[in-house]
Length: 140
Length: 140
Image (cartoon, rainbow over all chains, first blue to last red; front, side, top):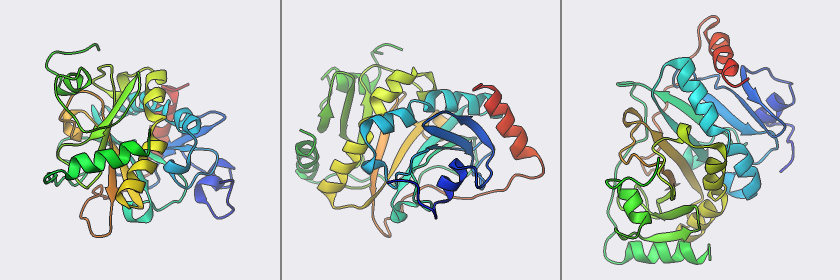
């Protein structure tokens, strides 16, 4: 869970690799994605190395995510965008390329061709109720 | 910013519309998406009506997002998935259909055809530096 020598985001935090920083405090760093999907595409990361969001303590997640409203507002103001997606990919199958938790803020515009692939299903029979119970029991 | 009579999520919070609840406390509610992209697709919402994440106070965002690690872990445990996306759509152009902030937790599997459409660009010349400065100046 600590700094890993091979982690590119840990190297950015350590100042060993440059970034286009937009915000920093003791616990977090925000900078422009070097391969932006849109102008002003920002990454928000915890300075401490966590590979997965589900492995972060609640207070660390809270400390990270509390910055999203202000960051998003600043990105919109600077880019003139009105809409955006917040995206976190956890696990290679979900698109996580850097194994250090990062939150994407992606400004959106009409016809930009971005967005999440949407293909909604429906639960059959009791499947939904069953799943909700299984998830809820782990949170009780 | 308060309860709006027409908001479907406010009605779910008020118990006027049923949901498949997985977690609840004083400030937040989590339930299965009724049109899931994958089994165990969960929505996490603040009980108070906020239309946009960028309009939420930092502490409200924090209060909401602190639950993501535990919720995600429970979804993974219940579904057997190993990967997931966290997604928030803000603004109709970004795919927001219900105008009450909601955080998607979407379990992922190999070959599910989901995920974010990725089409990375590069900043030309000083454009990145300029944008970073414009965003940073609003956060200073």
